[in-house]
Every structure is written in C-alpha cells, then in structure tokens.
Length: 392
Image (cartoon, rainbow, N blue to C red; front, side, top):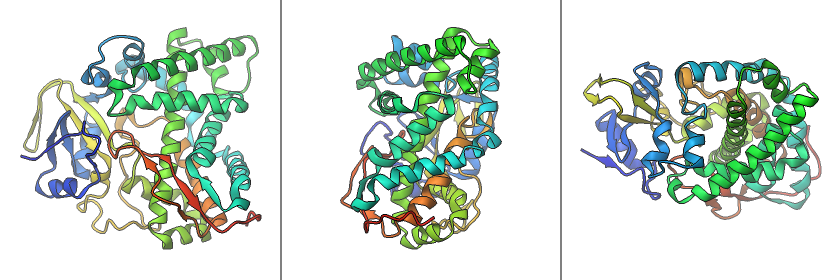
C-alpha cells in the first residue's frame, strides 16, 4: 500500500500523488497514522465522538516530551478535551459569534483601504509584510482590545509561535518558547490593566467572568492571538495565489464584491492553510476497512477532501458555486472557534483588493512554506498598475 511521508518538507499534500491515492482508497498510511482522503469519510471522522482532537501528542511525536512548549501546548484549546475544553470554549464563544464579528466589517474595510492606500501609488507590494500580516494582526488587536500600535511585536511573536504547526517543530523549540514567554508577559500586563480598569473588550469580559485561573487565561489568550493572526495571514496569501491563477475569477470578484464570502469558501476548499486536521481514537474503531486502534491517529487532508470528485463532481475553481462544506476549519466540537473572524475579514479584504488592483499579478515565485502542516506565503511580491483612487 502507498505510504505518505508527511514529515518530508518536499511532500505536497495537494499533489497528483495524493489525488491518485484517493482514487484507489479513502485512506492511506503515513508517518503519523493514517491520512483520510475523501470528503464523506473525512467529515464523518471529524464528527465521530470515538475520536478526540489529536494535536495533544504533536510535540511528543516530534521528540518534545517536556519543557515550556510541551506544557503550554497541552493546555491550549487544541489539546483540551471534556469539561475543561467545554468550559473555556463557552467563555470565548460570545466574542466570536457571527453578529459580533459582522459588526466589525466597517472597521475591517477601513483598515484594508488604509493598507492599500500606502502601496497603491507605487505599483508593487510584498503582500505578506505590507497587507496580510498587518491586516490580520491589527484585527486581532481590535477584537481582543489590545493596543493597535503594538501590532508589529504581536505579529512577530505570533509568527514565531506559528512554528508550532511546522513539520520542522523539533528544531524550532527555542524560537517558540521565546515567543510564548514574550506574548504571555505582554498579555499578563493587559490582564492586570483590565482588572484595574475594565473596558468593552474580550479580555475584560474574561476577567469579569472570573471562571478561569490565571494560567488558563494566559494560555487561552496567547493561543487566540497567534492562531487568529497566523491563519488569516496565511490564508490571504493562498487566496490571492489561487485567484490570480484564475484571472477571470479575480476580475469577477472585483466587479461583484457580494461574492466575497463565497470566494473565501472556495479558496479554502482548494488551497487551505491548514492542510490536515488531526484526530486520535479514544477506543478501537473500525471504519470501512480501516482499523484504528485506541490511541491511533488519523490526519484528515483538507485539500484532498475538498476536491474529492465524489462530493464535488465538478471541482473546478468557481467562486459562484455552492459546494459541500470544506473542512479547513475542522468540524464537530473542535470546529475552529474563530471561523467567523477569518471568514469575515477575508470576505472584506479579497473583493476590496480585486476591485482596487484589477491587474494584480505575481512578481516572481515568492517564498512559501512547505505544502504540508500549516502552509502559506513567507514573501509574495506582486505588481500592478499604480493607482491613487479607491474605486469605492
């Protein structure tokens, strides 16, 4: 049987090799358990209560068995289960409901215009550093009530914490632990300030609830900041990459901004930043020819599931089409808490960029993370016809 080496940085989870394996069988053996390749089985496993979130073992799988990073990782929402997971998630949910995030659309729009205004007259932009990163970092600052002027440092810590999801995580521990220490110290000061002077923000809400220990609050906030920023930053780069490969779709998005929300779903179906979602069996599980023993791990490959012709007979990229739900945000009780944030801020940004920069095009290949684990652009230089008008 075919075996995927997910630990190999050169292995591309969106490659024809993966597609060919999907036609032979719905699962395949990997370096870390089994990969699930088809949409129906992937969706079922993510909702199957015989599995739990599988990320808790990620440090150990990479030889990291103790220390600051290992301890912190085991306490994040990604790793928690049962009552602790439910209790902490319940406290976070109100701030991330659709209505609360939708109310921020004017702020997101103003921020996107501000950033584009800075480079539009020049006719070139490095998308990550000049748009995707400041946009995502400043939005997280706004939502959590952090000082927006601190976004550079917040983004730097978040970027270093993003190495937690790298297939090279074993070599990144000093960088990750320095970021945990820095961001936790910064947020502890914010918490102390809100205890003295509450505001209308998430930190004040969590402090007032008085249901989290100091440690739980610190871990939760650090995780929210870095996960929220990294996901949006990476997905914006991947979205632009995808849309520019389909110039007709880029042009259409600029002409019909109401397609923004659908464009986000379509991009995440075919080019997700979270390339696999992990689950661990809490009992022996038998599924259509696959036996997963208790403690066994399965990796749901997001792109393979999203482009499975069994669920989308015509998987051609098309922002006007309604598809079965993609799995880029996971599913079940561990469905991504911040999905409304990511969906809304990208639904604002992508049509705005398409309208203001209609002839946007790559200026060289850029620099990209491996297409495995969490992927995205490190640098993505683009060029376009200079403009000084907003077009809105």
